[in-house]
Length: 430
Image 1 (cartoon, rainbow, N blue to C red):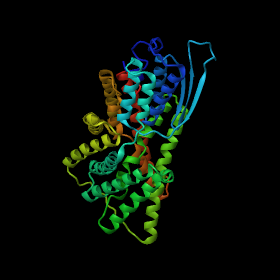
Image 2: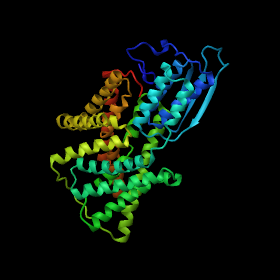
Image 3: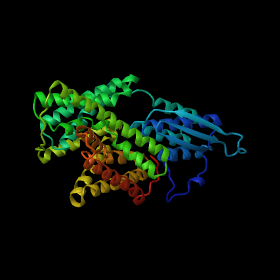
Image 4: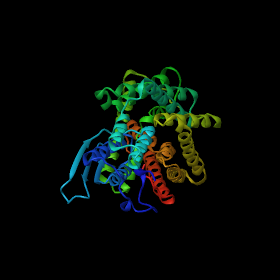
């Protein structure tokens, strides 16, 4: 059993797990657990999964730990259960940035924690190995990430069967946003306004193309080009945390996701208003002419793009891509048979159960299957469409249909996640 991921299920209760043998001192063990918590937080772990992993690792190291985690920080209260109450109490408060999904480093953090518990690594060496995960990805890695932005945007446009001009425009804007993202990594002021600037860039380029080159499905192209920035996963995680009674974290994450949608909308609205002021009149059309084979090619390209953007290890690309394609196909054909919400539910149910089976079988994080499997189902694009429609029309009813669709998608996705964990009980937290 992998240490960081055992969860109360049909296994031996976690309270009965014997502490691992270690010669590390009390302070060293606390430092390791704290470092592990920071790494898991940085790699996009949701609150309930992070807290479960940390509690178990601490217990196996002979510590009592009561974690309280939110999207931008954590409080960890430690004590030594072998000493009288109050003698060894230690509390650590850590301020953190919002995490970002990094499947390779998540798997490495899991492996390091297991090696420490099993005695392969001592606690100081384990902590040093965790700190080694903080190294940057290098210029080649950044180029691959930028390329991933463009591929994801073009692939989503292809999945929507948009004309070739729309696909090319979305892909080009995606590349520009990837460059902007790389620049924002080292510039805090740019980072604060990043989503608004990205929305402005997407809106401006799409309007120029539609005005000077040819007609576009304007709003759809803008949404496809911004697909990587849409907080659909954040919305899903927020609702998941709320249903698991992590109310503070879920509320904060939900507010952050809505703020991201608003900033993207603000940038897009500025571009639309500037075009109106200077007299640009973009040609808008509603056309989905692509044949079925384009959808299949776009699906493969999109799955590859998300494997890149999730920073999976190259050896895990086939698994991540298969999960992403499976989730999309289950949703598509299930939706055709039973309705769109039912398709999303079946896909989330199937991919959650598959992730749990993978975790049980291979002793690796189920997130390698679960996250890619639901990434194309999350409701971020529908939510953004509803807000853009509302701003354009200045009418509360304009985005109502899209808002209802987003809510239906979110509820179906959340139900699939919950019942997927019931169908195949999770023995891992990640």
